[in-house]
Image (cartoon, rainbow, N blue to C red):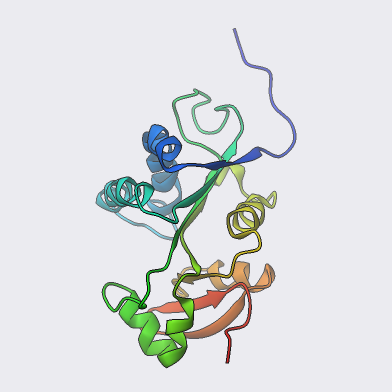
Amino acid sequence: MTRPERTGAPALRRLTGPEALALHDRLVETYAAVFCAPPWNDSPERAARFGELLTDWAGKPGFAAVLADDGGTVGTGRQDRAVPGFAVGLTTPTPFPADRAYGQVRRLLGPAAETLSDWLEVAELAVHPAARRGGLGRRLLATLTADRPAWLLTVPQVAGTTAFYDAVGWVRHGTGYGITVYTNRPLPR
């Protein structure tokens, strides 16, 4: 029996940490479809690392996730396979961390980096190649952040990333150290 083709945009739903963990393998598969292919060209180990991070993030206070749900029609079409897209965020710790990429953000923004504490940090935004060009990334980002102050960093060397965040109205705060920092509102002065 074949499933009827779905029309329209995938429904979006917020996920709790346990709900995200229940979809762990599907989210990792979507991550790999996005980031292990051009133009990102990450290794399969990076996709596995995302799976480890997701497990850690899902248990943290302030975890937020949004899933685009098309009933399993993306990729192989099976319910247990890739999802059309997802967005994951976390509340940024106070004080603003200095480890990992946080140190680069601190170097770019200087003391203004401290204002990002308690904001939502968009950790991942992924739209499956089969679900692109329909505004799904924009919808996922808007739903994840809603009315919360939020920030993210991206890699400017990958074609289209900064153009996307510029187009959705995020504020660019600088590029350097291999990253570009964006917020969904101006930083307080």
